[in-house]
Image (tube, rainbow, N blue to C red; front, side, top):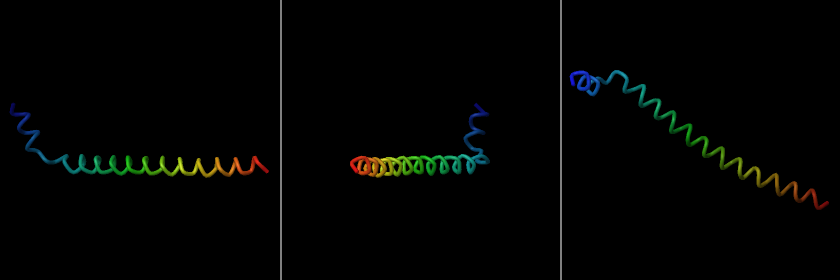
Length: 55
């Protein structure tokens, strides 16, 4: 029980955890943005390919 109280009261590693969560949130947002960009880019190349195929 003493160990649990000490772990809750101790704030030494709190900054590291907060930075890790912040980096994870930014990485998740970047992955979503890049995925959306890739889908749009794929659509552009598909339409270009279709247009060139009809020539």
